[in-house]
Image (cartoon, rainbow, N blue to C red; front, top):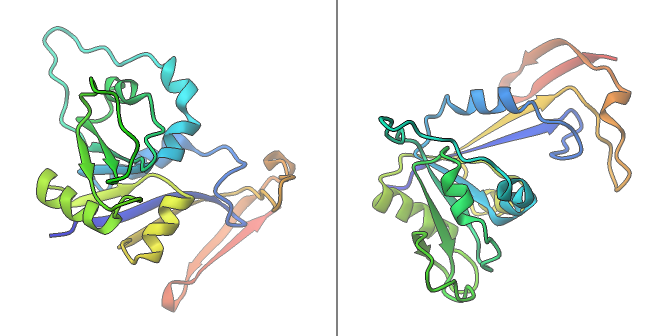
Length: 205
């Protein structure tokens, strides 16, 4: 049975997903509501943090401590661009890490010990991947912690069951020249929900 798929996205008031400081503490505190079995991200998300990952300090386990069960981190990497698999695993946030590849994904290092799921020909077949995450990993809930191409592809394929938006009181602007978030001091005055799912947010500037 295919897992329930929820996409959690931090956005600005004007609908942008970048160019502002995300409230990481609140974002990941809210993420615990779903108790996901698998965290699904794209290679672009990992590559954006690659430098930080290389210098990250793994969470040390005490001699009597066993790694706590947690979600599996599944990363879509059709072109085998990620080189920091061990760093991801050693962070200690996930119970394991699995690489999602396609049939034509370039060859990986022969000594790689990272589990793989191979679907699709040139690109990862996202629908089949979700089915395998359900059948092979027993996943009931998959949380997508990624925006951009992966989220767009999942939405276009009708694979997202739930979309959760954490709206930040900032205006980013459009184009390459972003409006500095600190230019506006937005304070939520009222939030109202209407039939059909429309939400009216009133901010004082």
